[in-house]
Amino acid sequence: MTKPQQNPMRSVHRAFQVLSELELAQRPLRLTDLAQRTGLHIATTQRLVNVLTEHGYASRHSNGYTAGPAALSAAHAFATTSPVRLIARPILEELANATGLTASLYIRVQNSRVLIDRVEGGRRPQYSLPIGERLPLYPGAAGKVFLACDPETDLDATAADLAPVTLADGTETELDHGHVVIAAITSCTNTSNPSVMLGAGLLAKKAIEKGLQSKPWVKTSLAPGSMVVTEYYEKAGLTQYLDQLGFNLVGYGCTTCIGNSGPLPDEISKAVNDNDLAVCSVLSGNRNFEGRINPDVKMNYLASPPLVVAYALAGTMDWDPYKDPFPGSDVMLRDIWPTEQEIHELIETSVKSEMFTKSYAEVFAGDERWNSLDVPTGDRFAWAEDSTYVRKAPYFDGMPAEPEPVQDITGARVLAKLGDSVTTDHISPAGAIKKDSPAGRYLQEHGVEPREFNSYGSRRGNHEVMIRGTFANIRLRNQLAPGTEGGVTRKLPEGEEMTIYDAAMKYAEEGTPLVVIGGKEYGSGSSRDWAAKGTKLLGVKAVIAESFERIHRSNLIGMGVLPLQVEGGVDLTGEEEISITGLAEPMNRGETPSEVTIQAGGKEFKARVRIDTPKEAEYFRHGGILQYVLRSLRDAE
Image (cartoon, rainbow, N blue to C red; front, side, top):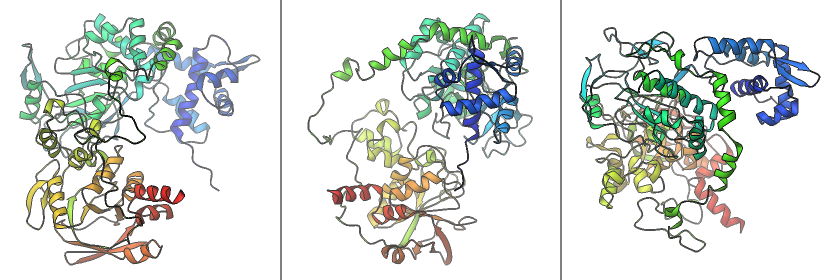
């Protein structure tokens, strides 16, 4: 049996955890001490210590291990050179090579000793980009430059003159391409790490002391993942400095990542849209897909919390932290970047274990409003017919006792014809709910005012909202409706342009099955469950694509939707009537066909059936995993 391949980033990160503990310790540490401090298995700790010792980053003594001369030299370099440059990269690469792994060029280790020198995002959310690299924003954009952006962007924009803006308080300023309009320290990922959180607070403190302020067009927010964060901020005396830069506490749940940034100020939003500006957000979360953060923002970047603060001070992505002072000042980032020692000392004095034990001991207590809620009794959930948040989903409506025979698909229409790299965030409902969208109209019809819409994520328990938000991402481009952006299609054969939801309902009334055509990497991304659920509830029977993301392909089968793969892509206009044959007969006799035949508009071609395992075939025969599980529970009684 082939040994599973190790994750290089995990091994490198673990090695650096051990190295950091050795450097911070005031005495030699035994293996048991290191294992306890890092949370690693003793055997893993031993292996990593051996590698560190061999390369001079650790020294072995009779009473334990200490940091070696190579590590101390690197620590000095980190403290005395450009603060955000990843000084540790040579160490990490050598450690990776020593363990037989390939070191990634995009090392993303974030702890008290390694502060990331890259941001992730831009035209494609997965791009990992050096913060000092200048690339053109638009082809031939008259010398316009933009940091960390796809040079082959397909944005329909040209370099514009600065757009004048007068803010509500009378401040007069200007907006340009690349300006950062949202800077958010968000609740996920980094906020459980005191090192980077205190690093952000220290940077804010030093910025205030140098006379710096966030740029007036930047909407700033702080949403830590735990009340413990605000407690150690208070103890460290850093809250006031974050507040002065606008990083005020807004809550402890999902915020900017899930589309809860809130609207930009009216005057900012108007300037962005009137001048078709490509403005940016910078956040310390782990979601930066198109259209998810804010409808006015085209470029979304992920960064560490200290860099979020830094970009709020700069106000633009068109800024080289290594060479440029903060715009409007002579202060360099290196002048205010906290040292490792400063962060470590603050952790020692401000972060206490009892903070965590006390806070988490009361995690289920709730406040007065929570405890005053009326809780129904009984052993079954009490569905509220008038709820706009949680409704009984129709997955089991009309479900027969036994699975019905699988059928071929005939007379189908294309609901959407999409390009490459369509993510589950393009498919799944995510972000804010627009007032004039199908979901917005539904909520208003049920007595919900737009200011109470909340986000799709908060209403994921109501399938009526979620189905209306499927394929409704504001950046989705359906090739069936050229020149449009958002959840728009054409109802065929009439050719009438309408929302994807409205078209799907009309097809359902006619009894017309639906298919979706995609390109490469269909279904990459993170919002996976509703990307498959919404597809199913819209009446889609099959998705035909050049390639699939692994988990979304499996989830489609879990909802009874057939994934079909066509090598080289699908050469159709999307206006054809489609039939898919060769599926029913083998499936109904207990076999899974390797391919099916697709007939469309006089063309005929083969497609590979991406039902990859016997268990997936069982799910599909039952109409989906939910029906399979329910029948299995019945049969087990």
